[in-house]
Length: 112
Image (tube, rainbow, N blue to C red; front, side, top):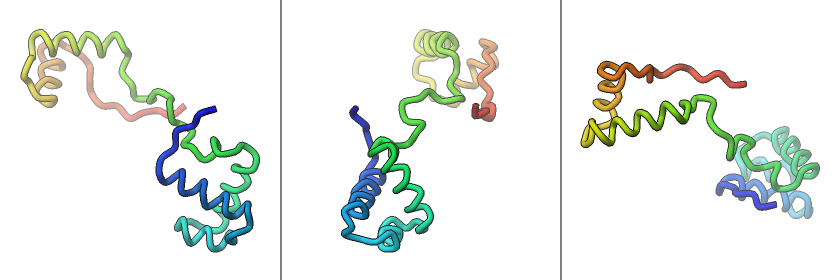
């Protein structure tokens, strides 16, 4: 299984592997990663149980809870490209809400 990881996650992986190979202690690893020893133990436990994929961010590849419906997004993009060509994002948003009646107000996301 191919897992994409950030530089920070790759550094964590290499440090945890050094702990497993007994080249450094958990205390040294905590100092290297600027996290607590308890966090190191938690990451190490997760790494041993699930492998490198456990260190990748769990939300990677999932859609946002705040994402607008695709149909609404396409309607807005069509109007912007046809009628509002050259408008900046702020003015285009204003025209879409006032002239065209779209409800594009920011709403807090509900995690679920």
